[in-house]
Length: 142
Image (tube, rainbow, N blue to C red; front, side, top):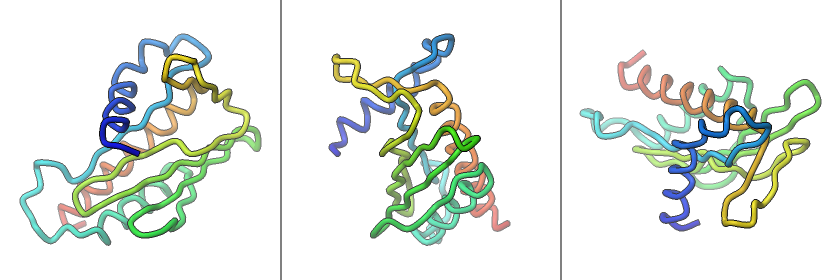
């Protein structure tokens, strides 16, 4: 995936709230990381991996290694909905990218964007917030 594509997906995430009243919305791909506020140079890719794993566990996602500096996380809700995301990471950032789903209404809108059940964006938003929280805790040494 190119950087431009990831930026487009991030933009979609920022405006997805426009469609919150509908059953589907554009697929979100949030990203984050230790960001510009990092003053310590000791935050490593291993620390980021640990923050991702802890963030997944806190929000009900199951995380597994999927190769070098990439995690895959799965959530199954009420034995009815399932989502798989890919989370590539470095010591300074990560992104959460849609990979697959069951019973979520994922479809191509025909205009270069994709639609999915709005619950997906809520679950991914909570996952992203939890990972951000874990990064902050790790940076604070907790």
